[in-house]
Length: 275
Image (cartoon, rainbow, N blue to C red; front, side, top):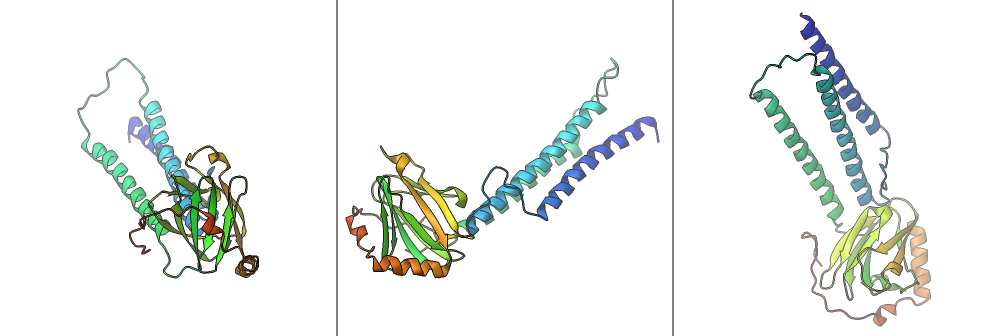
């Protein structure tokens, strides 16, 4: 083997060795808890699926970036100028061109497949949710109505209401707006959905861990938009039913009548959902 071929072999070995190291690192990461990468790991089952997709996309980007950087550095040092001799010229390299065309297409298809899969999981609704809640956004507050339980929680500006959910159980949320466009957003859920006049949005939330999570309106809706806050409190099913009985005893079931009565056409953003 000539000196040039031996040198080229060594360079390729370094390049693929670096790429292999990155792939091994990604495999090791998959065996433990994935890092948050600056985001939230998702306090709900749906939000956790979103986080997993995000984390794996970041890892894939690191792997692709690492391999690309390795190839770039290899080309820089392997083909750096050594003399004034003009290198061999050629018009095209069909195998190489096919390679760098097909690989990105495969990557895009893989990302598309997993994105659609996660999106379907997030948008899927259970046929038998544990509890149903109608969330009404209005200027400038929130109303959480539990129609089957005859409980209603109402909060206006500077009186942030609290939506209580049972931990580990599926909660069906029906989201509507009484006036303008609002945004239902809970940071730690990795979830946001519009509350639009004339539109009914339906989705499920399954909180994984007990705790209190801050929510807010994310669409500018007028003067007191910044004060349109709420909380989501997740408790054990036993504590949830204790809370329900307490609310019923205190008569928190008539507040919804004080809200405007918007005329909305029922339309779900999920074609599989029947309202």
